Structure formats: structure tokens, C-alpha cells
Image (tube, rainbow, N blue to C red):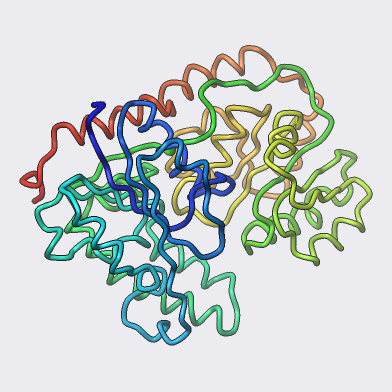
Length: 379
């Protein structure tokens, strides 16, 4: 495979790998590079800087400015797609005959282009985006609510473009079932992530941890919920850590002596927090896609307390503590906070995670498809 080339079109700059979508992209690139695939990477540039590091794992890295004009909100195409439409990208894709991997529906503006009709084209479905945006509608108000609603409607129509892909790689079994009902070229490719081995430690930690991008509504609301409904009269310490915490969350945490907010921890600090916590709490109201922080915590942390939405489509139920109500979450925290994390739990994780979620193994699945596929495979 040392002479195999692949175009990868990404929705953002995938380094540093510090949030869900780019984590999957970056560690996929790294695993493919290690397996001998020579990658032409194409990145849309808007809120993250260029990364010199990407040159070490890619044959070429090309950046394109995302066209973020307010007037484009009126276009019939989804804004997340229409704002990623570079003629320079199309020219670069046409410079050779190599396969193309589109990372997310965001990057699929040229998927159906007639000049690419003879090419092997693959799409990584990070979410079913129309469903994800429909969920955002429920949490928004005012103009944001209207935007998310229109974007969801546009995405539901635009997603039909997937019929032009030779292969669709889903990230969860739930998405696989939904997309397989429409397309016959769907394959589950579990998420790529930062861990090669399970490294969680035995023993006990001194706190529970909730972490995430705290500027995102779902995460911010969960942080408030933990302060107001779970830890308000518990003796268990809670650390809430993540990027850009909403000021209301910071203020709420200050009113609880057992709650601490750590603002914008760097990668090393966050890894330390996950490793040393006794319970990693991961709750969400959104069932779309696959929550990469769950994989990270299972590889590196002790007990993981989650709700059903966090687990859906992951197949990781047996490795987590499941709580779907205030009562059950509080009960599990009380039962497990002083219970040592044992070597038998670590072995269970190794048996499942180091097989099903091996980056090298999953890169091999993609490479096998590259090796044996042709455009004639498309229905």
C-alpha cells in the first residue's frame, strides 16, 4: 500500500485534535499514514489556524477559506455545505485520479459533480446532520432557533446527495441502521481516537468529573443540571472542566462549595483530570453520532456514569454505569464513589476496546475497501 494515494477533504483543520469531529479525522489520518497511505489533505479554514504538524503525516496539505457571508444563509443549500465551496478544491481534486474521502456532509458540495463521476468517492458520516440540527432547534431561541430549523430542513434534502458516494462510513450502529434503510453501500467504521491501549488505573480518585466544550448548549445545560439537581447536597466533589464555560455556569458552581470549574484546561491537564477522577460523568440529550469523550474516558479513566443517550449506538453498555434519572444518578454516585476500581474492570475494557476500537484495525478496514473497490461498485 506504500504507493497508494488518497484525497481527504475536511470541514476544519484537524489539528490539534481537541473536539469530537476533528479527533476522529486526525487519528484516522495518523493511522492511515502509519499504514502507508499517502494523503492529500484539504482543509477549510475559518476558526482554527493552519497546522505545520499536519505536514508530517500528509503528502500535501492545502487550505481553503470558508466563505461565510450572511447573504449565503438565503441559499437553498445548507449553510454548512454552501460555505465550503472552493473552485480551487475542485481543481486540485481533478489533478489526478486518486480516491476521495469527504469528511462529513459539510464537505460534500462537489460529491455529485459530473467531473468527479468516474472517481471512487467515500463519505464519513459523523452524524446524520439533519437530525443533529433538529435537536439544536429544541435548545435554541430567537434567530438561532430559526436558523437551526431551516438548516435541518435543507440538510434533510441535501443528504440525498449521498447516493453519489461509492461508500458511506458511519460512526455508530444507530446511524448505520438509519442510512442502510436508504443506501446499500453503508459500513460501520468505529471512531478513531487518541488511545492505542487501555491505561486506566486501579484504586480510587478524589472527585467526579464532567468535561466538554462548555460553550455548547447541551454541555452547558448538563453542567447546570449537575450543580442544581445532583451535587447540590452531596459531599462528593465535582470538577467541571472545558472550553469557554458559560458565565452562568461559573456563577452557579461558585454557589456550591463542592463544585469547581476549571476553565480552558490544556490537553495534558484534561487527560490528567480524566485519569485521576473516580467517576467520569457523561450525560447528553442528543443521540446523534458518537461521543468521542466516552471512548477517551473508557480508555483512560475509572468508572464512567452515562445516560442512555450517550450510549445509543455505541455497543459499550457493559462498560458503563447507566443512570437516566436524578435518583439513579445520585444512587450510583453514592454506591461507587468509595468503591475501588479493580483490575478485573480494566481487563474487561481491554477485551472490548482494544479490539473493536483499534485505530490500526479500523484503518485496515478502510484500506481494504480502497484496495478492492471500484466505481462500478456504486449502485
